[in-house]
Length: 228
Image (tube, rainbow, N blue to C red):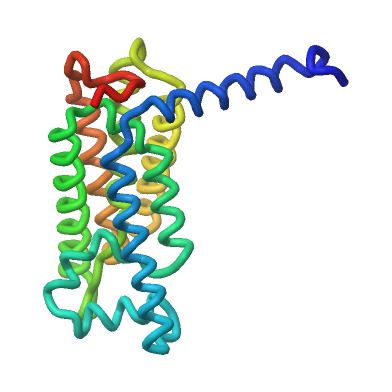
């Protein structure tokens, strides 16, 4: 089959992927990639520490850190992960949603990240402390930011359909997936097992949905190019 004979759907798909690549390269993603790099560095240190100490797994090592590591461990909570699947899933979501950064000013995006991470961890701990029978609880991982960015992309896209790119469309689909995941979590665990509700995912998503719904944009900030 010659290139001209290929089905139109194949050509359209290739054009769509090509557009995504071009937009991603042009988008401002530096801050998100910095967060991903920091998260990756911390996880690599977890893996090395698990190997060096003979811990049975990264998850076991992380549990030990929370028991004996003191308050400093809580500062690392957003960057700690329980294993390779947990780490890869969270990092992949952040990489997909990284171009949402361009809709904020640099300072505004840092504020969004810090507020989202703090809220996700705070609510996560609050849910466990209120309902878990365990005396020691731990909340960690960067997934709250992924849910916040997905929620933001969804409501911003709905409210600004005339200013949505192919990258924003993909991000909005991730936002829909986030809403479905949190909804299933709530339906499965309430009212019988509230301690099993992932408060970090719920609060991160709600925070992102609200910010996206209230987003009005700033001239020169939104767009597909990196102005910095």
